[in-house]
Length: 193
Image (tube, rainbow, N blue to C red; front, top):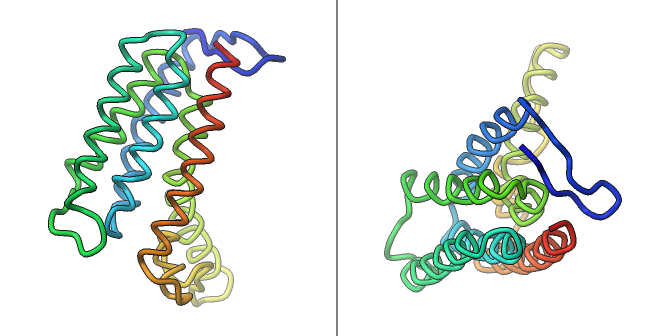
């Protein structure tokens, strides 16, 4: 029930709230990876980087979970050999929900929820873009009688496509952002453990 947080906060006891946080993480991570799984290599590559970040973050707490995360990252990289631009294999719901569940399980076992949300920043962004789109559409429909859209299309990577960015560039940008978030996540996990 203890959650390690960065230096000024230290260990925080969540008590019964730990169960709710764990449930929220499993649902949100599964759906976040599932929403990201649209472009060739986007979900697999960002998941591999998120697993690397989480592996570094949980290393001082449980080396076995760190090895699990590293092996999941390796599996994602192996999958990317077939799923890069012009993909020949498709992940689907089973794979994306399993990857999200594995990330959430790493956080639930070790209490490293803060690094999870950092390393999974792309998944959080994609899920938030869908939430914002739906809420904005419903609010404008209620107040104006006709729904308007906040983004051209949700999830966010489709908005970028409609803005004129090509699929390989969107994936490359997501990889770069995910790499930075992964390093920050690993560092924050090491500092808080």
